[in-house]
Length: 214
Length: 294
Image (cartoon, rainbow over all chains, first blue to last red; front, top):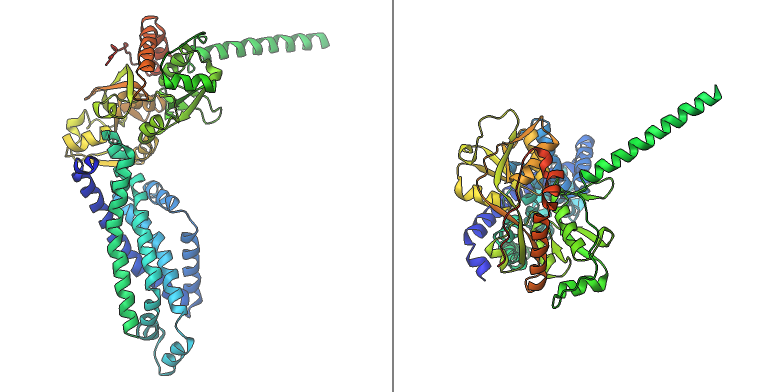
């Protein structure tokens, strides 16, 4: 307990960074992933191919490598941002590939007739997607999307190895201050439960809403 | 003609042989510090760690593997070298374990206490600063070396002369390290960046993302010695880090014994020889510190 109470400032600062990292990367990943999902079902072959290549590449690369490429590769190409921005780039580009697949699986649950009917009444591809397909698809995509976001919350810890002082760095910091590593880890785990719990609750509420509206 | 060619060959191979011999001799005096022959008949009443070592017939020593001239593992040969390694070997030999009975295990800073408490290693020699807080978890013999926090900068950088000139600069060190925590608390004008290894900080500094790297001067000197045209140590130490040998908290018998061994190493001149062969190659000098027997 003293491990926590002696180091409130550290826990609060680190978890604040974690949450900010989660919110910004999550928002970017949701938008970019939905666009990618749209690309993958679009009638334009070049867009479909680009989407497929991106998703295949990012989904099959370990996140640490993505981080490494961004944090160590970009400076060599003279692309200079803060390490926090590098972390956002790495996390959101990686997560957007998973968001894309969740969205695409949601789209696949919408009967083909829906899109055909929309087209029959003269809607464009964009309109069909916005007005008919995506609203239905996102309902079915809520549980997998939440899993992706929860995974993102935990993945943020990798940023501690690449220049960002967040929750993943608490263990090493407290160890240097002389507190038992095991105690520190338990409190970090508790912290993550507190961060992730609202996400799980949101998921449950969204699901209930979807069920009622059916 | 044939005779002549054979004679030339003979001379050439003789030269090659003698050259080889000289090289390996130099190697022994250089990176690998002189290791004394193992003591025999060592007994330690009431030391659980020593009993374990005797039963296993070997000693497992926790070290660092990525600090040139301190604790460094050659990636091609797998050989360990450096000042900490020399100290570790000396202690082992006086406990009755020759070089062939030593097993080095690279343990990163964050796992040191866990490894000692869990019995994964028998003792730890690797830039391990003695602090009161750590004494609650493990015991320390020593100190066997005193280092000070310093700054490593690019060779052409004249704007950084010490911790007070760090305003607006980006300072790098390993995740959660004490030197970095000190910069954050006492020199708030500096931006801090954390990586897993010092070598990654060096890479980021050469890429222009980082202005200075901070940790104990001993570690920084090792890197400056590796790339003398690119890097330099500012040379204004602003803390005192006492390196000790970490061991199990309840093992006072072993701690006393290692203290005796360290004292012997210092008075016999063995300490100085080990230093000159490793850290001393960077051009810095040092004298053995006084032991603290608490």
